Length: 229
Ligand code: APR
Image (cartoon, rainbow, N blue to C red; front, top):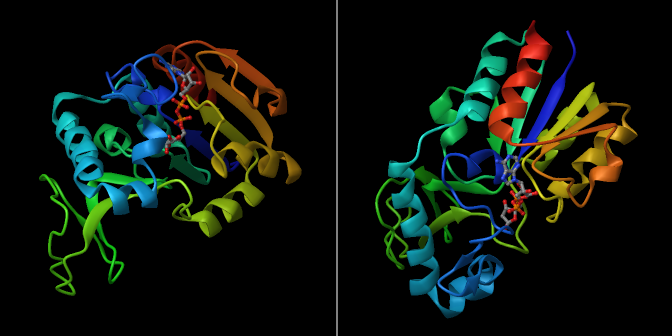
């Protein structure tokens, strides 16, 4: 049984009603997302940054996984080989669909990170700036989101999985943000076949052996069916 690494981005959650970053509607109250996604923004305007993530966390209550999340959860249940679903998304729609073999490389909306002691914990409610960390007592809890300029989670595990992968599949990501945008080249370097499923060709499309253009809600169930049947 072969080994698969899947990378997902905002496009897989678009049909659930969560806006992508770089498409239409990718602005938030006039701010570029990048402007509320940096350590500098958190330091200079913590109220704005915390509110941005509070609203996005609260919005999760109103969305549900779509056919693409459900199809990847089915693949996770039924694929006997190695599988790792790496998501850049901070929503929890993969988990709610039932996927288990996964890694949130850019953090999670429903989690808080202590800037003082580094502990990560589940967090469902609003998170005002200077909330006290129950572990160390510092008034330093922040959204558990990897900002631009910070190291994504799980890079060693991801790189090891890419080195073993027979197939790398990228779903719903623009290929604009590194290191995720470079995974296709790493996978190729180690001999994996590469497939892109995206609404339109991404910035890195030329690196893929095959690119299928269309909505994730249609393309992903079809591809999973092809893999399992
Ligand atoms: N099905 C498939 N693909 C879609 C769909 C859909 N229904 N809707 C949109 N897309 C595609 C778009 O064409 C685009 O190429 O999904 C991609 C979304 O790209 P981005 O908005 O750039 O999202 P993503 O690639 O996940 O962004 C990467 O940037 O701001 C940071 O940390 C943030 O994790 C995020 C990272």
